Image: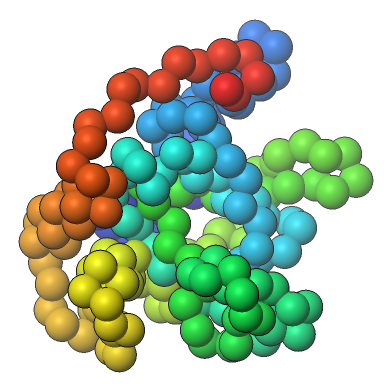
Length: 187
């Protein structure tokens, strides 16, 4: 599934190269080197994000702490000094996100099941809706915590995209990053 910065999650086909690797397609989808993010759904679903997203991508989705994250003692990615509490902002994911299934026994990515597609879709439309990353990034930039979900403010996708680009530029110091070089190892 692709979770775009400016829209709702949808199913996609990821192509493998002649060696059976999907690395090139994953890098194209996130716009650079990939980094796995498996905090939200556990070991059976992996999210791939742009590893340099904070510096060169607009904010996409906010990740809020789950009860499991609190019980496991996850440190807040906002300050790295305290254990995150359920419902608190854990981090912001930047740029387009790709969700794939993961087989922990083989260590290989796989297709998402129908149930996993529903789970990812629900999370990224209800819990972490379009605009949530932008709203949290703007709140951080302004030195305050946002109280209400972004979708309740009636922000259009165009307005969200424009504000997202502006916030990303402001948070990135106005720098325009170079295009990443892609290698076989993802770096």
